[in-house]
Length: 232
Ligand SMILES: *Cc1c(COP(=O)(O)O)cnc(C)c1O
Image 1 (tube, protein in one colour):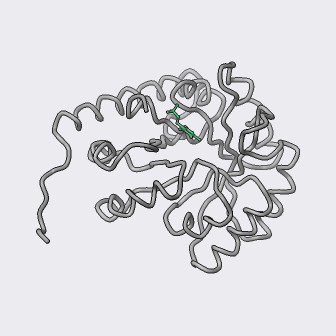
Image 2: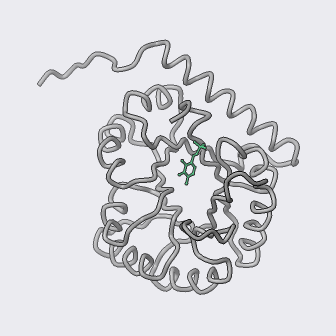
């Protein structure tokens, strides 16, 4: 096998990625300034679901290091090679996780945003012991109380937090995806309140359509796909 390979992306793709990243960062900084927050207090997670490695590399090339995926299997197909190329990448799982994939998720990801039930907490606790890997976790809250959405009820947060800690999980904050087609800000404010009530400081909230509001309401992590990669 040859030790060289042609660059799989063009200079134009890199320029494009740089523009998109610069634009998103400028909008993030503006929102932070409006809320008198330090722009450095909100991390940008580039959500690369459905994007192949060649679409992701230009963003890595221009300095992006935090990435997010919503499916374990899809991530297993593209990230091991990308991480081998750029070891300081931090990979976040933002989609629903089945308990039987807990160990696979643990081996690949650094942070999991979708912890929402006792059975998953138990599986992750066991997988941590087995793999010797200890990640950071967000509890996902079904903030709009929607039937088909992942996340626990807001009232379940104290019990799940206690269970997660008892299982050895380092829970750093709360994550939510507000209902589509309604104003997100009230849900972001509510998530912030639930986090404060439970002594949690990190908030994973805000996507391409609503990240400015999320930052103004305290997001420490925004999860942005479309605005960085274009429409899926
Ligand atoms: C896809 C996805 C995002 C990114 O959404 P965009 O609207 O493309 O920015 C953020 N969070 C979760 C959980 C997602 O599944």
